[in-house]
Length: 204
View 1 (cartoon, rainbow, N blue to C red):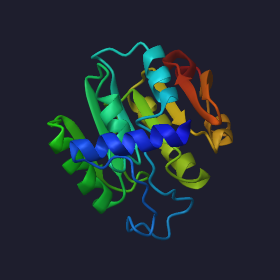
View 2 (cartoon, rainbow, N blue to C red):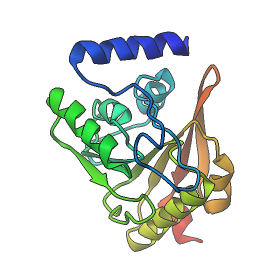
View 3 (cartoon, rainbow, N blue to C red):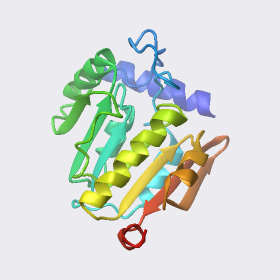
């Protein structure tokens, strides 16, 4: 079933003159010597992501950052929900360029794309949702979660983390007061939803 959805997504891309779906290796994306870096693959067409987003009570007051946004497959899906702001941070300049071209062809001009190392990107105080499609290994993931915790210390707020294909779920368990609140499963594919409650954070 996944292969059928993948092929249908590729066909849809071709008709629209975009490329959200085709996978790209780290080497082709110009990413070298990054611990645990993952190849680019789109999650925007996956039914478990739609199920998770439908479940969450998203409002225009909510803002979301996609870590490892790649060609923008997930960004396109996130943009269909009433987030007040959608942004992506991507290490690969070439993937970010493809993403911008894709969004431009779909006349989407209100998504910000930041080209930067996820560990070094700390301008996250304005976000309360964070999306991960297994973008990097446990070492980088741990540091990114530390950044999020530091951000909630500066500006206390409730946080929701959407972790698609949770290969390193144990990092969330070790990182602090992240509560696994919901799991969405579609065959072998899975999404974990974690919450960080403001009151819980203040009590730690």
